[in-house]
Image (cartoon, rainbow, N blue to C red; front, side, top):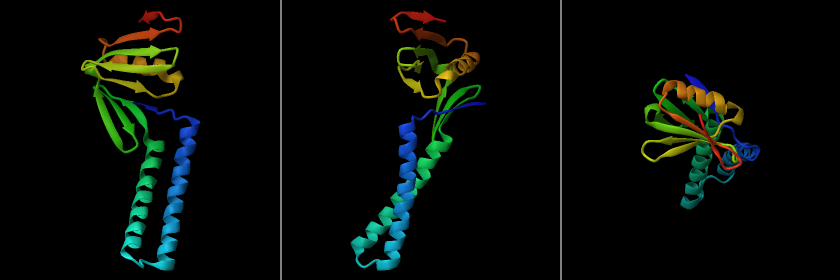
Length: 153
């Protein structure tokens, strides 16, 4: 099984790290406030619990997105891991792969009018495409060049 990690932009990476730091800070501040003031009122208690739950959830989701976001190609499926969320696509249902060179996007089209955009390093597009085509030789591969013409391979 071959894996291809997501390519996050620097801005997204920085925002996720900032979210992790803020969530950890939110937990620390809320625990400090609980120790200092306790649960003086019901609404304050509910607020403390909600802040702790949201921050804990962020501390699970954000690192998992950074660590486990990848595409995995098996013999029968293309599996998309986005953190703790898993989606799988049957390779047998793929109709075509299209590389848009002007926007540098790789798109997979399926039989039921669905599609997905592949978000990996552009250097991996050829290897990724060859891996999928080796699993199903009926998949068509197209390239749109920047001058508006199509190359069919």
